[in-house]
View 1 (cartoon, rainbow over the protein chains, first blue to last red):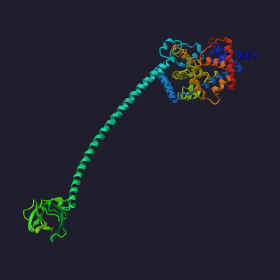
View 2: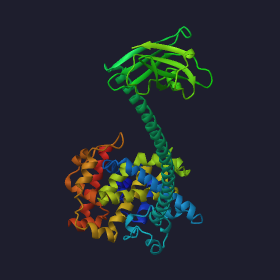
View 3: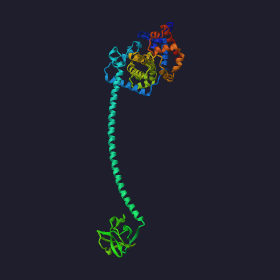
View 4: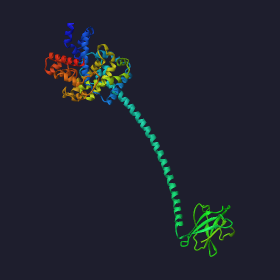
Length: 308
Length: 171
Protein backbone atom coordinates (compact mmCIF):
# COMPACT_ATOMS: atom_id res chain seq x y z
CA UNK A 1 0.00 0.00 0.00
CA UNK A 2 2.87 2.32 0.81
CA UNK A 3 4.40 1.48 -2.54
CA UNK A 4 1.21 2.46 -4.27
CA UNK A 5 1.05 5.73 -2.40
CA UNK A 6 4.57 6.47 -3.61
CA UNK A 7 3.59 5.50 -7.13
CA UNK A 8 0.65 7.87 -7.01
CA UNK A 9 2.78 10.64 -5.53
CA UNK A 10 5.41 10.20 -8.26
CA UNK A 11 3.27 12.21 -10.69
CA UNK A 12 3.26 9.57 -13.39
CA UNK A 13 -0.56 9.45 -13.39
CA UNK A 14 -0.76 13.18 -14.13
CA UNK A 15 1.73 12.68 -16.93
CA UNK A 16 -0.37 9.80 -18.23
CA UNK A 17 -3.48 11.96 -18.21
CA UNK A 18 -1.71 14.83 -19.93
CA UNK A 19 -0.54 12.43 -22.63
CA UNK A 20 3.16 13.11 -22.23
CA UNK A 21 4.27 9.50 -21.60
CA UNK A 22 5.82 7.14 -24.12
CA UNK A 23 3.88 4.09 -25.30
CA UNK A 24 5.81 1.80 -22.93
CA UNK A 25 5.25 4.05 -19.95
CA UNK A 26 1.53 4.26 -20.76
CA UNK A 27 1.19 0.52 -20.98
CA UNK A 28 2.96 0.30 -17.61
CA UNK A 29 0.52 2.72 -15.98
CA UNK A 30 -2.46 0.86 -17.42
CA UNK A 31 -1.07 -2.43 -16.08
CA UNK A 32 -0.66 -1.03 -12.58
CA UNK A 33 -4.11 0.59 -12.66
CA UNK A 34 -5.67 -2.75 -13.58
CA UNK A 35 -4.09 -4.44 -10.55
CA UNK A 36 -4.38 -1.66 -8.00
CA UNK A 37 -7.84 -0.18 -7.34
CA UNK A 38 -6.31 2.78 -5.48
CA UNK A 39 -4.23 3.69 -8.53
CA UNK A 40 -7.22 3.21 -10.81
CA UNK A 41 -9.34 5.51 -8.62
CA UNK A 42 -6.64 8.14 -8.60
CA UNK A 43 -6.23 7.89 -12.36
CA UNK A 44 -9.97 8.37 -12.86
CA UNK A 45 -9.95 11.40 -10.59
CA UNK A 46 -7.05 12.97 -12.47
CA UNK A 47 -8.59 12.24 -15.85
CA UNK A 48 -11.89 13.71 -14.74
CA UNK A 49 -10.10 16.81 -13.55
CA UNK A 50 -8.48 17.32 -16.94
CA UNK A 51 -11.75 16.51 -18.70
CA UNK A 52 -13.45 19.22 -16.72
CA UNK A 53 -10.64 21.62 -17.52
CA UNK A 54 -11.06 20.77 -21.20
CA UNK A 55 -14.85 21.04 -21.02
CA UNK A 56 -14.53 24.43 -19.35
CA UNK A 57 -13.04 25.66 -22.62
CA UNK A 58 -16.11 24.56 -24.58
CA UNK A 59 -17.13 26.84 -27.43
CA UNK A 60 -20.49 26.11 -29.03
CA UNK A 61 -20.03 25.97 -32.82
CA UNK A 62 -22.60 27.74 -35.00
CA UNK A 63 -25.51 25.76 -36.40
CA UNK A 64 -24.13 26.37 -39.90
CA UNK A 65 -20.90 24.75 -38.84
CA UNK A 66 -22.87 21.83 -37.37
CA UNK A 67 -24.42 21.20 -40.79
CA UNK A 68 -21.06 21.50 -42.54
CA UNK A 69 -19.21 19.19 -40.20
CA UNK A 70 -21.92 16.52 -40.10
CA UNK A 71 -22.31 16.69 -43.88
CA UNK A 72 -18.57 16.42 -44.43
CA UNK A 73 -18.41 13.51 -42.05
CA UNK A 74 -21.22 11.75 -43.89
CA UNK A 75 -19.67 12.44 -47.30
CA UNK A 76 -16.38 11.15 -46.01
CA UNK A 77 -17.70 7.83 -44.77
CA UNK A 78 -19.82 7.40 -47.91
CA UNK A 79 -16.74 7.96 -50.02
CA UNK A 80 -14.79 5.38 -48.08
CA UNK A 81 -17.61 2.86 -48.18
CA UNK A 82 -18.11 3.13 -51.93
CA UNK A 83 -14.62 3.66 -53.29
CA UNK A 84 -12.57 1.33 -51.13
CA UNK A 85 -14.66 -1.63 -50.14
CA UNK A 86 -11.51 -3.74 -50.08
CA UNK A 87 -9.58 -1.34 -47.87
CA UNK A 88 -8.39 -2.90 -44.64
CA UNK A 89 -10.63 -2.10 -41.71
CA UNK A 90 -9.54 1.19 -40.23
CA UNK A 91 -10.11 0.21 -36.67
CA UNK A 92 -7.07 -2.05 -36.09
CA UNK A 93 -4.85 0.57 -37.67
CA UNK A 94 -6.13 3.14 -35.26
CA UNK A 95 -5.96 0.76 -32.36
CA UNK A 96 -2.23 0.77 -32.86
CA UNK A 97 -2.12 4.50 -33.24
CA UNK A 98 -4.58 5.94 -30.79
CA UNK A 99 -2.89 5.00 -27.51
CA UNK A 100 0.47 6.19 -28.82
CA UNK A 101 1.52 9.42 -27.17
CA UNK A 102 1.23 12.27 -29.55
CA UNK A 103 4.99 12.79 -29.81
CA UNK A 104 5.28 9.45 -31.58
CA UNK A 105 2.92 10.58 -34.30
CA UNK A 106 4.64 11.84 -37.41
CA UNK A 107 5.33 15.45 -36.49
CA UNK A 108 4.90 17.20 -39.79
CA UNK A 109 1.88 16.08 -41.70
CA UNK A 110 0.07 18.29 -44.17
CA UNK A 111 -3.55 17.26 -44.27
CA UNK A 112 -3.63 16.55 -47.97
CA UNK A 113 -3.67 13.49 -50.13
CA UNK A 114 0.05 13.86 -50.81
CA UNK A 115 0.77 12.61 -47.33
CA UNK A 116 -0.75 9.22 -48.07
CA UNK A 117 2.24 7.65 -49.72
CA UNK A 118 4.74 9.21 -47.35
CA UNK A 119 2.99 7.88 -44.28
CA UNK A 120 3.33 4.19 -44.86
CA UNK A 121 3.23 2.79 -41.34
CA UNK A 122 -0.51 2.48 -41.10
CA UNK A 123 -2.13 5.88 -41.06
CA UNK A 124 -2.83 5.85 -44.78
CA UNK A 125 -6.50 4.96 -44.61
CA UNK A 126 -7.22 7.62 -42.07
CA UNK A 127 -5.12 10.36 -43.60
CA UNK A 128 -6.87 9.91 -46.87
CA UNK A 129 -10.14 11.17 -45.46
CA UNK A 130 -9.91 14.91 -45.93
CA UNK A 131 -9.03 14.60 -49.62
CA UNK A 132 -11.62 11.89 -50.16
CA UNK A 133 -14.17 13.97 -48.33
CA UNK A 134 -13.60 16.97 -50.55
CA UNK A 135 -13.77 14.81 -53.70
CA UNK A 136 -17.10 13.44 -52.55
CA UNK A 137 -18.34 16.88 -51.75
CA UNK A 138 -17.28 18.17 -55.15
CA UNK A 139 -19.01 15.31 -56.92
CA UNK A 140 -22.12 15.90 -54.89
CA UNK A 141 -22.00 19.63 -55.57
CA UNK A 142 -21.59 19.06 -59.31
CA UNK A 143 -24.55 16.66 -59.37
CA UNK A 144 -26.65 19.07 -57.32
CA UNK A 145 -25.68 21.98 -59.58
CA UNK A 146 -26.67 20.10 -62.73
CA UNK A 147 -29.95 19.06 -61.17
CA UNK A 148 -30.68 22.62 -60.15
CA UNK A 149 -29.78 23.88 -63.61
CA UNK A 150 -32.17 21.40 -65.24
CA UNK A 151 -34.96 22.24 -62.86
CA UNK A 152 -34.35 25.92 -63.42
CA UNK A 153 -34.36 25.44 -67.21
CA UNK A 154 -37.62 23.52 -67.13
CA UNK A 155 -39.12 26.13 -64.86
CA UNK A 156 -38.05 28.90 -67.24
CA UNK A 157 -39.53 27.03 -70.22
CA UNK A 158 -42.87 26.55 -68.46
CA UNK A 159 -42.96 30.13 -67.30
CA UNK A 160 -42.08 31.38 -70.79
CA UNK A 161 -44.90 29.32 -72.31
CA UNK A 162 -47.34 30.62 -69.78
CA UNK A 163 -46.16 34.15 -70.42
CA UNK A 164 -46.79 33.75 -74.14
CA UNK A 165 -50.26 32.32 -73.51
CA UNK A 166 -51.00 35.18 -71.21
CA UNK A 167 -49.78 37.70 -73.77
CA UNK A 168 -51.97 36.29 -76.56
CA UNK A 169 -54.98 36.16 -74.21
CA UNK A 170 -54.32 39.72 -73.29
CA UNK A 171 -54.12 40.74 -76.97
CA UNK A 172 -57.47 39.06 -77.67
CA UNK A 173 -59.03 40.71 -74.67
CA UNK A 174 -57.68 44.08 -75.68
CA UNK A 175 -58.98 43.71 -79.27
CA UNK A 176 -62.35 42.63 -77.95
CA UNK A 177 -62.41 45.48 -75.55
CA UNK A 178 -61.57 48.13 -78.17
CA UNK A 179 -64.14 46.69 -80.54
CA UNK A 180 -66.76 46.88 -77.83
CA UNK A 181 -65.65 50.37 -76.90
CA UNK A 182 -65.93 51.49 -80.55
CA UNK A 183 -69.44 50.05 -80.85
CA UNK A 184 -70.51 51.60 -77.62
CA UNK A 185 -68.96 54.92 -78.60
CA UNK A 186 -70.85 54.92 -81.88
CA UNK A 187 -74.11 54.07 -80.17
CA UNK A 188 -73.45 56.72 -77.59
CA UNK A 189 -72.71 59.33 -80.25
CA UNK A 190 -75.95 58.50 -81.96
CA UNK A 191 -77.90 58.79 -78.73
CA UNK A 192 -76.17 62.07 -77.95
CA UNK A 193 -77.16 63.36 -81.34
CA UNK A 194 -80.75 62.24 -80.89
CA UNK A 195 -80.86 63.75 -77.45
CA UNK A 196 -79.53 67.02 -78.86
CA UNK A 197 -82.34 67.01 -81.41
CA UNK A 198 -85.01 66.36 -78.84
CA UNK A 199 -83.65 69.06 -76.53
CA UNK A 200 -83.12 71.61 -79.28
CA UNK A 201 -85.85 74.27 -79.04
CA UNK A 202 -85.67 74.85 -82.81
CA UNK A 203 -87.30 71.44 -83.35
CA UNK A 204 -91.01 71.22 -83.11
CA UNK A 205 -92.59 68.00 -82.05
CA UNK A 206 -95.51 66.77 -84.20
CA UNK A 207 -97.78 63.98 -82.91
CA UNK A 208 -98.93 61.62 -85.67
CA UNK A 209 -101.99 59.74 -84.42
CA UNK A 210 -103.53 56.58 -85.75
CA UNK A 211 -106.34 56.75 -88.31
CA UNK A 212 -109.52 54.69 -87.69
CA UNK A 213 -107.80 51.95 -89.68
CA UNK A 214 -105.04 51.74 -86.99
CA UNK A 215 -106.27 53.52 -83.87
CA UNK A 216 -103.38 52.26 -81.68
CA UNK A 217 -100.72 53.63 -84.03
CA UNK A 218 -98.56 56.50 -82.80
CA UNK A 219 -95.47 58.25 -84.07
CA UNK A 220 -93.74 61.56 -83.67
CA UNK A 221 -91.94 63.83 -86.11
CA UNK A 222 -89.41 66.46 -85.13
CA UNK A 223 -89.18 69.30 -87.60
CA UNK A 224 -86.73 72.15 -87.66
CA UNK A 225 -88.18 74.89 -89.83
CA UNK A 226 -84.86 76.72 -89.92
CA UNK A 227 -82.57 73.84 -90.99
CA UNK A 228 -85.40 71.93 -92.67
CA UNK A 229 -84.31 68.77 -90.83
CA UNK A 230 -86.89 66.08 -90.17
CA UNK A 231 -86.62 63.20 -87.71
CA UNK A 232 -89.13 60.48 -87.06
CA UNK A 233 -89.61 58.56 -83.84
CA UNK A 234 -92.04 55.65 -83.95
CA UNK A 235 -93.93 54.65 -80.79
CA UNK A 236 -96.19 52.03 -82.24
CA UNK A 237 -97.07 51.06 -85.82
CA UNK A 238 -98.90 48.01 -87.12
CA UNK A 239 -96.72 45.22 -88.45
CA UNK A 240 -96.08 45.51 -92.16
CA UNK A 241 -97.11 42.92 -94.74
CA UNK A 242 -94.34 41.25 -96.78
CA UNK A 243 -92.72 43.59 -99.31
CA UNK A 244 -94.14 46.77 -97.79
CA UNK A 245 -92.52 49.77 -96.13
CA UNK A 246 -93.78 52.88 -94.33
CA UNK A 247 -93.31 56.11 -96.22
CA UNK A 248 -93.39 59.59 -94.57
CA UNK A 249 -95.11 62.47 -96.27
CA UNK A 250 -95.04 66.17 -95.59
CA UNK A 251 -98.22 68.06 -96.48
CA UNK A 252 -97.50 71.52 -97.72
CA UNK A 253 -100.62 73.50 -98.60
CA UNK A 254 -102.48 70.22 -99.11
CA UNK A 255 -99.84 68.82 -101.44
CA UNK A 256 -98.05 65.64 -100.27
CA UNK A 257 -94.22 65.76 -100.48
CA UNK A 258 -92.11 62.62 -100.11
CA UNK A 259 -90.11 62.77 -96.86
CA UNK A 260 -88.41 59.33 -97.20
CA UNK A 261 -88.81 55.65 -96.33
CA UNK A 262 -88.67 54.36 -92.76
CA UNK A 263 -85.97 51.76 -92.03
CA UNK A 264 -87.12 48.59 -90.37
CA UNK A 265 -85.41 49.58 -87.12
CA UNK A 266 -87.22 52.90 -87.22
CA UNK A 267 -90.59 51.33 -87.98
CA UNK A 268 -90.27 48.97 -85.02
CA UNK A 269 -89.33 51.88 -82.75
CA UNK A 270 -85.76 50.85 -82.12
CA UNK A 271 -84.25 54.13 -83.23
CA UNK A 272 -84.91 57.65 -84.40
CA UNK A 273 -84.24 58.27 -88.08
CA UNK A 274 -83.39 61.42 -89.96
CA UNK A 275 -85.61 61.81 -93.02
CA UNK A 276 -85.37 64.02 -96.10
CA UNK A 277 -85.20 67.76 -95.54
CA UNK A 278 -88.55 69.46 -95.97
CA UNK A 279 -88.71 73.13 -97.01
CA UNK A 280 -92.18 73.79 -95.71
CA UNK A 281 -95.01 71.74 -94.15
CA UNK A 282 -98.13 72.10 -92.05
CA UNK A 283 -98.71 68.40 -91.44
CA UNK A 284 -97.05 64.95 -91.68
CA UNK A 285 -98.48 61.54 -92.50
CA UNK A 286 -97.40 57.93 -93.13
CA UNK A 287 -98.73 55.44 -95.66
CA UNK A 288 -97.85 51.82 -96.39
CA UNK A 289 -96.18 51.54 -99.78
CA UNK A 290 -94.19 49.03 -101.79
CA UNK A 291 -90.50 48.82 -100.81
CA UNK A 292 -88.69 51.86 -102.19
CA UNK A 293 -91.78 54.06 -102.00
CA UNK A 294 -93.93 55.88 -104.49
CA UNK A 295 -94.06 59.45 -105.79
CA UNK A 296 -97.64 59.85 -104.58
CA UNK A 297 -99.23 58.42 -101.42
CA UNK A 298 -101.77 55.58 -101.51
CA UNK A 299 -104.46 57.25 -99.44
CA UNK A 300 -106.18 53.97 -98.55
CA UNK A 301 -103.13 52.90 -96.52
CA UNK A 302 -102.87 56.12 -94.50
CA UNK A 303 -101.86 54.93 -91.02
CA UNK A 304 -100.96 58.05 -88.97
CA UNK A 305 -101.35 61.77 -89.48
CA UNK A 306 -100.78 64.96 -87.45
CA UNK A 307 -100.73 68.74 -87.85
CA UNK A 308 -97.86 70.94 -86.79
CA UNK B 1 -26.27 3.94 -25.15
CA UNK B 2 -24.21 6.15 -27.40
CA UNK B 3 -21.12 3.94 -27.13
CA UNK B 4 -23.07 0.84 -28.13
CA UNK B 5 -24.70 2.62 -31.06
CA UNK B 6 -21.33 3.86 -32.29
CA UNK B 7 -19.93 0.37 -31.92
CA UNK B 8 -22.87 -0.89 -34.02
CA UNK B 9 -21.94 1.65 -36.73
CA UNK B 10 -25.23 3.46 -36.26
CA UNK B 11 -24.76 6.63 -38.32
CA UNK B 12 -27.57 8.44 -36.55
CA UNK B 13 -25.52 8.17 -33.38
CA UNK B 14 -22.96 10.53 -34.86
CA UNK B 15 -25.43 13.42 -34.78
CA UNK B 16 -26.08 12.72 -31.11
CA UNK B 17 -22.36 12.45 -30.58
CA UNK B 18 -21.85 15.83 -32.24
CA UNK B 19 -24.53 17.54 -30.18
CA UNK B 20 -23.10 16.12 -27.00
CA UNK B 21 -19.37 16.65 -27.55
CA UNK B 22 -18.77 19.13 -30.38
CA UNK B 23 -18.72 22.22 -28.15
CA UNK B 24 -16.13 20.73 -25.79
CA UNK B 25 -13.99 19.32 -28.61
CA UNK B 26 -14.23 22.48 -30.66
CA UNK B 27 -13.34 24.63 -27.68
CA UNK B 28 -10.17 22.68 -26.98
CA UNK B 29 -9.24 22.43 -30.66
CA UNK B 30 -9.76 26.17 -31.05
CA UNK B 31 -7.60 26.80 -27.98
CA UNK B 32 -4.85 24.76 -29.63
CA UNK B 33 -4.99 25.88 -33.27
CA UNK B 34 -6.33 29.39 -32.51
CA UNK B 35 -7.99 29.83 -35.90
CA UNK B 36 -11.69 29.12 -36.32
CA UNK B 37 -11.34 27.77 -39.86
CA UNK B 38 -8.59 25.40 -38.89
CA UNK B 39 -10.50 24.36 -35.79
CA UNK B 40 -13.51 23.44 -37.90
CA UNK B 41 -11.32 21.37 -40.22
CA UNK B 42 -9.74 19.59 -37.29
CA UNK B 43 -13.11 18.91 -35.68
CA UNK B 44 -14.27 17.42 -38.97
CA UNK B 45 -11.18 15.25 -39.23
CA UNK B 46 -11.69 14.20 -35.64
CA UNK B 47 -15.27 13.12 -36.35
CA UNK B 48 -14.12 10.96 -39.24
CA UNK B 49 -11.25 9.53 -37.24
CA UNK B 50 -13.47 8.76 -34.26
CA UNK B 51 -15.97 7.00 -36.50
CA UNK B 52 -13.40 4.87 -38.27
CA UNK B 53 -11.32 3.99 -35.25
CA UNK B 54 -14.14 3.52 -32.81
CA UNK B 55 -13.33 -0.17 -32.38
CA UNK B 56 -10.10 0.86 -30.71
CA UNK B 57 -11.94 2.67 -27.95
CA UNK B 58 -11.65 0.55 -24.80
CA UNK B 59 -14.33 1.58 -22.33
CA UNK B 60 -12.48 -0.17 -19.51
CA UNK B 61 -9.58 2.25 -19.88
CA UNK B 62 -11.63 5.40 -19.55
CA UNK B 63 -14.66 7.45 -20.48
CA UNK B 64 -15.63 8.14 -24.06
CA UNK B 65 -15.07 11.83 -23.44
CA UNK B 66 -11.45 11.21 -22.46
CA UNK B 67 -10.82 9.17 -25.56
CA UNK B 68 -12.46 11.51 -28.07
CA UNK B 69 -10.82 14.50 -26.42
CA UNK B 70 -7.42 12.85 -26.82
CA UNK B 71 -8.09 11.98 -30.45
CA UNK B 72 -9.13 15.58 -31.17
CA UNK B 73 -6.32 17.08 -29.15
CA UNK B 74 -3.72 14.95 -30.93
CA UNK B 75 -5.10 15.95 -34.34
CA UNK B 76 -5.02 19.60 -33.36
CA UNK B 77 -1.50 19.35 -32.02
CA UNK B 78 -0.38 17.50 -35.16
CA UNK B 79 -1.85 20.39 -37.11
CA UNK B 80 0.07 23.12 -35.30
CA UNK B 81 3.25 21.07 -35.47
CA UNK B 82 2.95 20.74 -39.24
CA UNK B 83 5.40 22.92 -41.14
CA UNK B 84 2.76 24.81 -43.11
CA UNK B 85 0.91 25.82 -40.02
CA UNK B 86 4.03 26.96 -38.17
CA UNK B 87 5.07 29.27 -40.97
CA UNK B 88 1.68 30.93 -40.88
CA UNK B 89 1.36 31.39 -37.16
CA UNK B 90 4.88 31.53 -35.78
CA UNK B 91 4.47 35.04 -34.52
CA UNK B 92 1.45 34.19 -32.38
CA UNK B 93 2.43 33.61 -28.78
CA UNK B 94 0.92 30.54 -27.19
CA UNK B 95 -1.02 32.45 -24.56
CA UNK B 96 -2.49 34.93 -27.00
CA UNK B 97 -5.86 33.38 -27.50
CA UNK B 98 -8.12 35.96 -26.00
CA UNK B 99 -10.81 35.23 -28.58
CA UNK B 100 -11.01 31.60 -27.55
CA UNK B 101 -10.90 32.56 -23.89
CA UNK B 102 -13.65 35.08 -24.30
CA UNK B 103 -15.84 32.58 -26.11
CA UNK B 104 -15.08 29.87 -23.63
CA UNK B 105 -15.85 31.94 -20.59
CA UNK B 106 -19.62 31.90 -20.83
CA UNK B 107 -20.16 28.52 -22.44
CA UNK B 108 -21.54 25.66 -20.43
CA UNK B 109 -21.11 22.03 -21.24
CA UNK B 110 -22.34 19.68 -18.55
CA UNK B 111 -24.17 19.98 -15.25
CA UNK B 112 -21.10 19.07 -13.23
CA UNK B 113 -19.05 21.42 -15.32
CA UNK B 114 -17.13 24.06 -13.45
CA UNK B 115 -16.59 27.36 -15.17
CA UNK B 116 -13.25 28.22 -16.66
CA UNK B 117 -12.93 31.32 -14.54
CA UNK B 118 -13.54 29.34 -11.37
CA UNK B 119 -10.83 26.89 -12.38
CA UNK B 120 -8.28 29.45 -13.39
CA UNK B 121 -8.87 31.36 -10.16
CA UNK B 122 -7.91 28.25 -8.23
CA UNK B 123 -4.74 27.68 -10.27
CA UNK B 124 -1.85 30.03 -9.75
CA UNK B 125 -0.43 31.56 -12.96
CA UNK B 126 2.65 29.31 -12.96
CA UNK B 127 0.54 26.18 -12.66
CA UNK B 128 -1.85 27.31 -15.28
CA UNK B 129 0.91 28.16 -17.72
CA UNK B 130 2.36 24.69 -17.42
CA UNK B 131 -0.99 22.87 -17.73
CA UNK B 132 -1.83 24.92 -20.78
CA UNK B 133 1.54 24.32 -22.42
CA UNK B 134 1.24 20.59 -21.82
CA UNK B 135 -2.46 20.18 -22.59
CA UNK B 136 -3.05 22.79 -25.28
CA UNK B 137 0.44 23.43 -26.56
CA UNK B 138 1.51 19.90 -27.36
CA UNK B 139 4.71 20.42 -25.44
CA UNK B 140 6.52 17.65 -23.59
CA UNK B 141 7.58 18.36 -20.03
CA UNK B 142 11.20 18.68 -21.20
CA UNK B 143 10.16 21.20 -23.85
CA UNK B 144 8.24 23.19 -21.27
CA UNK B 145 11.29 23.17 -19.01
CA UNK B 146 13.40 24.44 -21.86
CA UNK B 147 10.84 27.01 -22.95
CA UNK B 148 10.38 28.43 -19.47
CA UNK B 149 13.98 27.96 -18.48
CA UNK B 150 13.05 25.85 -15.46
CA UNK B 151 14.43 22.58 -14.09
CA UNK B 152 12.46 19.55 -15.33
CA UNK B 153 11.69 18.64 -11.70
CA UNK B 154 9.98 21.99 -11.14
CA UNK B 155 7.86 21.56 -14.24
CA UNK B 156 6.75 18.12 -13.05
CA UNK B 157 5.97 19.36 -9.56
CA UNK B 158 3.89 22.26 -10.85
CA UNK B 159 2.02 20.09 -13.33
CA UNK B 160 1.16 17.61 -10.58
CA UNK B 161 0.11 20.39 -8.23
CA UNK B 162 -2.08 21.96 -10.90
CA UNK B 163 -3.88 18.74 -11.60
CA UNK B 164 -4.37 18.13 -7.89
CA UNK B 165 -6.05 21.52 -7.62
CA UNK B 166 -8.32 20.67 -10.55
CA UNK B 167 -9.12 17.24 -9.09
CA UNK B 168 -10.19 18.82 -5.82
CA UNK B 169 -12.52 21.14 -7.68
CA UNK B 170 -14.16 18.29 -9.51
CA UNK B 171 -14.37 15.80 -6.68
